[in-house]
Image (cartoon, rainbow, N blue to C red):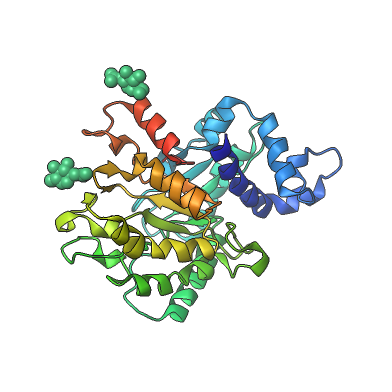
Length: 327
Ligand SMILES: *[C@@H]1O[C@H](CO)[C@@H](O)[C@H](O)[C@H]1NC(C)=O
Ligand SMILES: *[C@@H]1O[C@H](CO)[C@@H](O)[C@H](O)[C@H]1NC(C)=O
């Protein structure tokens, strides 16, 4: 429940952004959770008290756009939809085609009993081989503007892996082998989300209708796998883990990153998707990350080897580890 409240806290922030105009119009008699003038904690409590178990589970699920029919959105109370890699409404789709697609899915999400808008997520920025944080921030701003114009409020960026082995096939997604450069490059986060007002330091933040929620990924150690084998095992002591692979997350959390995506890889043989000590113990409890933690694509399936061996076990292990949204 604690985990779920935090996830819903962020969903509510999105609600405020997405349907602020509608909220203002219907204050009289509207439920508390829809009233932007109420304190956030009161809105969350009100909403949680109204939700059924099915609705709570649905809100923790992100599905691919190709299966996000209006019926599925309504019947399962789906919280979020994504475009998987290369999944587009049409080849070379126009901005209008994106807007129409998002609107269609959103209409179904809003027509459910509680009327909670779904959050559409998209892979928007990959691999920028430059070392100028201010330029990167402007790239974030431009990306946010274009993405948000289509009605999408969430980008799966940035990748803050520290690439420790040039054989790793995803080095192009990493800013550097040097964690200090990776830390500087987290400036893309305020570019995407907007600058954090000082009084809200550490709390997830999206600064208005031309900004999007960012996603620091892949938590943690994805660039440190043995022999650079992608999505494999990072064998490391705590000095290495907290001194090389974690510092990017210290910065990202301080800059108010709204979400964190978990890595397919393992740390010392324990899959990150089942790693309660690092996801809940460190990221949420120690670093006080208050946004939501999202799985990688079918990431919980891959907790077992072979993948999807025992899905109920995977759901149990993943949610217990601290994952708030499963895709
Ligand atoms: C790492 O890769 C090896 C060789 O492909 C594989 O046998 C092993 O299961 C992988 N380990 C993890 C944790 O992915
Ligand atoms: C799958 O996992 C569940 C939960 O841990 C367990 O109770 C069950 O026995 C497992 N099923 C199989 C076939 O291993």
